[in-house]
Length: 150
Image 1: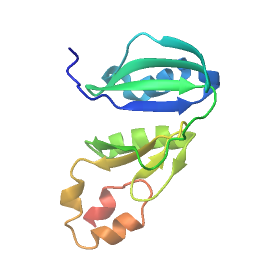
Image 2: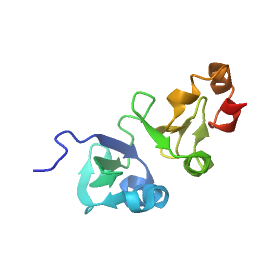
Image 3: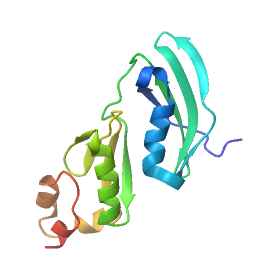
Image 4: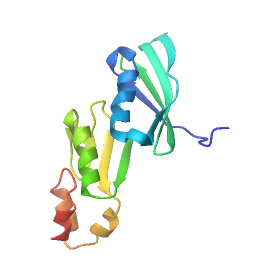
């Protein structure tokens, strides 16, 4: 039995239903922390060509499904937090996701496929206890740790 009894399913609609470009996009940023199982072609569905596969990111299993025609767009209701070790790691994820995606406020961004991320330092709770931390955060798009320390 799989160790993950519940597996989140992320449904993309891109690249004509070919999932390989989506897999490559996330594999490029997560490197050794990304594993992909075999792609399963589901054929023509009401949403057009459909493919899926199981992926594991940082030990958490997900299903990636991709259809040619959008069924339901990804939105803010599902998002992921990346707890980063330092500013370098924040910059790496932030710059990758926003290169073809969009910046938002307080460390939030959206990648090129519409998936939402909050890229934060793992000690954000500690930083938020500093004077003026809320004001600092509200003025940021990408989190800059140094601004909390001044």
